[in-house]
Image (cartoon, rainbow, N blue to C red; front, side):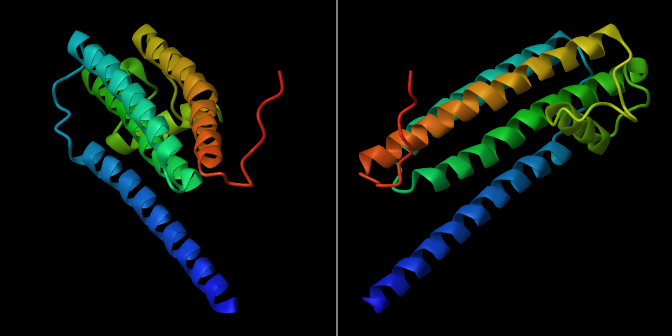
Length: 185
């Protein structure tokens, strides 16, 4: 009995470690791609179209991830992996847009943004900690930030609820006794 329990604990730890490794690698890969991407096309209609397409891809990724979570052997771990891919993708989309806007129109922000500055600004907006050293000064910059804030609310509220709902469904499918209860009407 103790031997079986020890194996189960080791297996759980190994699964958790693999989940953390994949999550970290996913976020690191998306961040590396952001820094390596040739972002030199300037800001314009094409950039906005790419942002919208990127957000649609983001929505598709989240939908596919939610579906995968419901079928996963370990839905909670799968949800962690889904968030570790979806959130960095979302942040990189906006950071790229801010970087291109700043390169095209440096007066859009209090200072020209490097890639790191653009990523920092994006995370600041996402975390809703407010602006300090960087804030949008032009109308286009403010519109983009407003769009990101609205999208942030969707990501945090609707998408998180969908992913956690998928975890609940996946746990019930497996007959997990620790599955969260249904929401009461």
